[in-house]
Image (cartoon, rainbow, N blue to C red; front, top):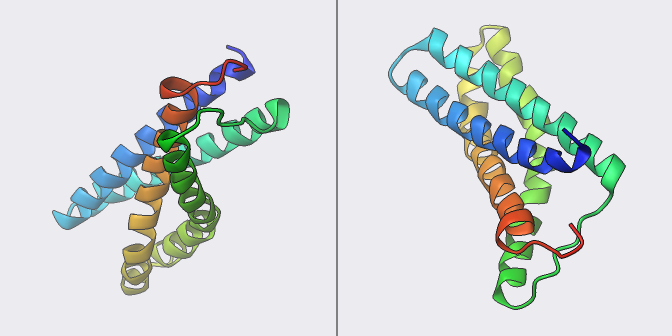
Length: 143
């Protein structure tokens, strides 16, 4: 594996995070608290692994430019410019959500999770979309 394989790893980790977040939500909605906790901790691990791979990749490769024009470029930047600020916000939101759970303050955990869940899902799904647009559907000749 080389550094150039990491975008595919990142997209996979984002996809796994998405599935685990959804499964964790289903588990808590069906009152399976242990399964919920397992899914959410697993989603945090997958997201953490993504973040490590993402940072390593961009430290070694730098910025990757989207070179396609027309409507794909507009769509790409629309997704990217909503994804980026929410991706920056999700780490502290996750910390603010799991801290009350670890303290067994589940009312506070639930209040925070109502904000964190949709944002985390959006970030993980749009992360996969950014990968697909940048490396699969509209790749640059330089990649």
